[in-house]
Image (cartoon, rainbow, N blue to C red):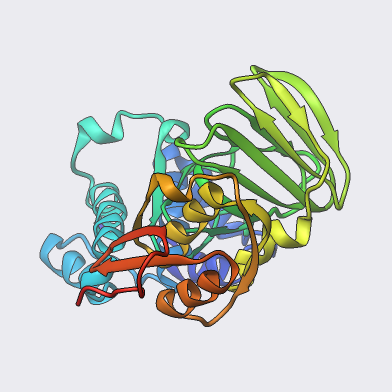
Length: 329
């Protein structure tokens, strides 16, 4: 059976997603829903790997070889590689016409997940060309088929630059709030262990919802925090530039309680910090971090509030300074 897949047109579409679709590509997509699923999976592979997938043949072994040739094994990105293989496997099942049970799922019910580990920042290009930057220990889950609905779920912190499509709403759902936009740039922080969610709007406009009820229509330069425990919304004393600075590899702390600072540092450096009760005194810190190592930063903090610290691999213990600071090698 001759492969009628318009590979040249597909590759052109991946490189230039905003250009009108070629007539032959439109015809191919209209043949059945599986073809749209194939294109969506190719867009996912391209957005994550940056490589244009080559045409597949119906030979399973050769197809796998071509997929694996596009993926480099790196130990520090183990989860990232596993994700690519899951995506590649789903595409291979479609391309080879096997795995009927998997293909029984409707395309609009398929999701893709991207995880950014502690101490890392990850950029994701969605199928509609929207860009998302994930902070450390953050996960983005989104509908693979953006044709029907632009819907993503965020656990952690992400900065979104959403492609404007006036006829297609873009929705971001976190643990306790939902953000609805058409085209804009904003930052959403919503970690499971935090008591509140924080939204900072850089440009455009967004609607902030809780339980599908609109609680705030935001304007550029505004930052709000929603406290789920108290069902309270606050939008004072927030600095949008400070909130979004992590995206440009700069951590800005301004008058933050030391308990909050610890959370920032854990995600920034990829460590686990234990805070002694002696330091839980409501003291607040202000500083900036760009290229400083963790040891250098702890020395800076020591000048602000005297501390002693112990480093043991990824474990860090902080307490009030009594003797000279010690470092366990």
